[in-house]
Amino acid sequence: MRSAEQIGRSADTPRAGIAVEALTKQFGRNAVVLHGVDLAIAPGEFICLLGPSGCGKTTLLRCIAGLEHPDDGRISIGNRLVVDAAQKVFVSPEQRQLGMVFQHYALWPHMTVGDNIGYPLRKRGVARAQRDEKIRQIMKVVGLPDVLDRRPSQLSGGQQQRVALARALVYEPPVLLLDEPLSNLDATLRTQLRRELRHLHERLGMTTILVTHDQEEASAVADSIAVMHHGRIIQRGSTSDVFRRPRTRFVAEFVGFDNFIPGRVVEHRTGRALIALDSGAKFDVPASEDCALRGRDVIVVARSGALQLQRLEGPQTDQGMARGVIRRVTAIGHGIEFEVALGDQIIIVRHGESVRSTPFEPGTEVLVDFLSEPVMLPAETAIDEAN
Image (cartoon, rainbow, N blue to C red; front, side, top):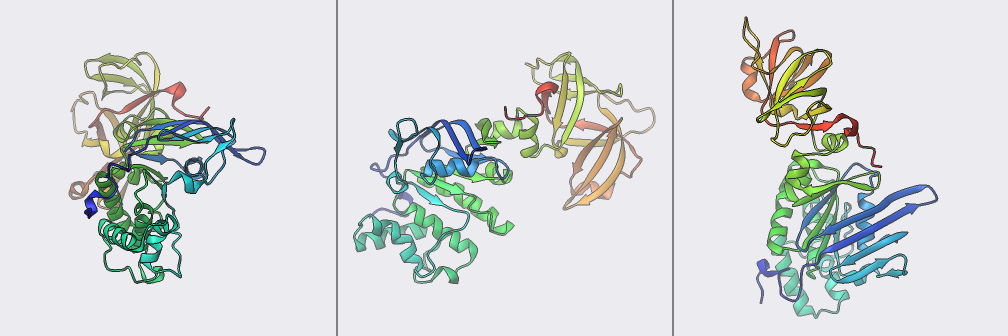
């Protein structure tokens, strides 16, 4: 008998990579949802398809699952070709042997929890005794060992989500597909289940694709991220790379950058770049040694939490920091938000709880310090149009 920790890692259940090639899908004559998407997912990788509503991420997931027929392109799962539109190859969803959890849990209300979870095994002809043992094991994995005889209507939303996960995992699929599975839960439970999703992935090791529009969720669980916009993948990389080094303004805004300062790189020296604003003001920012933007117009992109304010008093020198004037002060959550004018440019700075004891007032002259290296996007490519 295998332990719960062994579920999903057996030698006869290999992890499968996924290859999507030039995938196109449209609904009607003019509604092109996927534009020649290419995506390679390594065996055992946890990848997030991240993007706003309507960007094509769920359609891409449904094409991989076999719930949509692409108009063009190919999909391989492991060493098996499951879609080739040109050759009219299309493997049905049930033959792809994938686990899938939907935004709406799709549990059968007339069945008990045990019957819901055991349904995929029953469809595959697994004997009752073996089926019951697998159900007991997977319920321990998802942390719900004592609800097998209940109906879905007798469970909380979080419990129903765990049952949906258990049903998807019980037959040990090589790939798990998750379509915004936490979006219907309250914030506290969502945070808890994010951690558990990540722990499940680390324990079971199966290839996992998560669709979400929530950048915090993506950063909490995924190994890598593919940001989608207008039916295209516009940036793919590790979670750290996408969240720290967005390549377009769209990606930067979507992953939480909230300051976009137009200027020109007038000087670059060891670890620093001198930025000139249209107003004539100049300030230093941390910059990589390989900065190749000297003399070019750029957008300096920074998170509000990565900036710090100092009061400008008397003859104090700016030490290369940007000079500004506080226009507005707003208490937000456990911190405080400042709107600061750098000439005619307004930026946002957020400080933590400690600032509340000595707040800056509107009209205060301040210095703005960049605590970490901002992203510098060439001005001509800063706004991505997904072309």
